[in-house]
Image 1: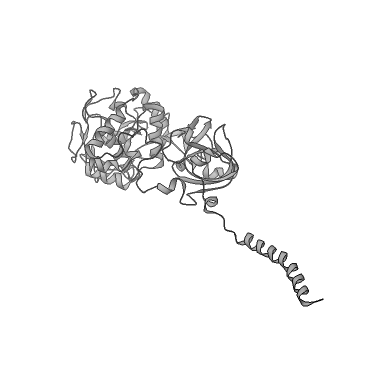
Image 2: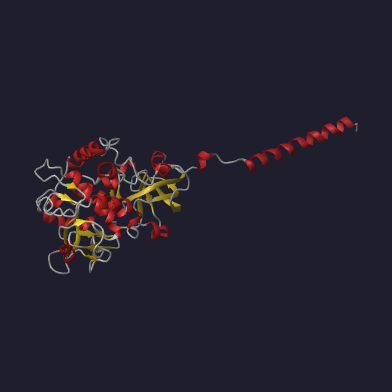
Length: 393
């Protein structure tokens, strides 16, 4: 056979082999696109209910029906509602996630109520759950975000505006100082539902329920878990502590500041009496029966875990009650000798406590329960901690 003919036949035989090898190499070394690797936001998962997906969101509550999500007093470990904002209240912007048995000990809210507010990344089938946009049969669940997309992309150490409360605070966004205080007063005083002093008993059994024991409440200063049935005025009972003392403005127990759940908390009768109407400041003698609390002749220092809670409660009161609704104008100052005047201190100490002890998941949940189930208003300093320095700093 002539050499040129032989060469042509060899080349013809090699071409398909080389083509196959080239195709194989392309397949082996093809890199997945960035879009395919990125997890979905909750909004994206809601709009794309098909196939398998990985979603990042904040845990906001426990779905129990198509349009019903519990934000506290959780009843089970089988489902989560997640959202792109940790303060979301609209079920339309939530994804309902099925929690199968292997994940319930860690992610179930009845067992782990403090998970509210945490970021979760979950992979599973994007399909309706409770006849609502959902994710079922999870194959992976982890806390935190696996990528810099989704809700953590805009998260900061100090929460600012979020989609869940932007509409509520719309008039206040972008304002500062006295102007901010004035607008917030209008917001938290509009459309409010007040309750009676008797109704406060049952409300506190919901807002301050012990997440580890639904038959109990957590007492504010002592941190003790006590039976809900032990409410009253006898030794060993718990009663209704006014964090802003009634005598600082003489508002009593009539509907209004005297029954405002944003500053009413359960506390042991004896400890409540020891606190009395004292202002807040650091120092003093250790309080027997309430570890971590200290008191002297004119001030009270709460335990470290609730210092910020106390500060934010009285910040709220100073904004909510400005003297225009038949109640005294409640104001904060830097004194601990305010007596029966409508003032409370010590402001510099309260600001420091607010910074040292930022809002917790439990505090955010309590704020939401008061808003959705009782008063229809919120404590702005839980939702926007940065506003405290703008108004009171």
